[in-house]
Image 1 (tube, one colour):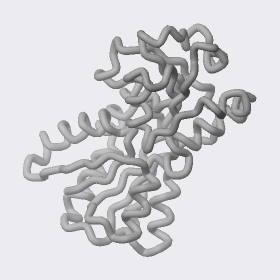
Image 2: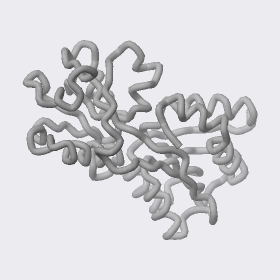
Image 3: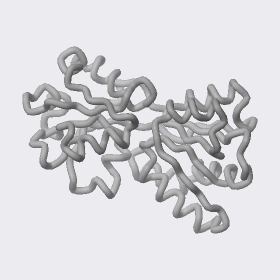
Length: 230
């Protein structure tokens, strides 16, 4: 079963797949990660995926409107959150300074996902505007193709600070590598994440089983561990 998954799910989905396969050893799962908008464009051309897990519930809804999903298979699975994240080597104390960290002269590049096709990029831009910083920092913005690439830019030092998904900041792979400050949730529109089973799925039974597991208490508990909320 092939899953087109939003990049913010990279680590959470790995854990979910491991637990799911303990109960469904016969199902081989191949996740692909990228921006939700890019996947949406591919899926309108019937890209060979079975399940779509988007960082924006609107993309599965659009596919439903076009008759490209199994009837009744659309669902919401979590809300995402954004944080300012800086590596330990950046010298930028985002935990203490909060949003004012972006005004520091040491911050020459701020990584965000491309708002054109990445929901987390749209959330980052909205937060900068609502907090009154967009005009002051717009020339510092460096775009990642998706939120995973955006996090890598901050992690590698290509950007001193990144506005990234909380799920990536909380991943074990990021533990001890940096620190973060959570952007107030009223500073950006709700990041309601959703999915759907594609009409041309080769394995509807496995896709339905995975959807059910993701929405069950066990799946939701893993998402919560990565900072997602109901």
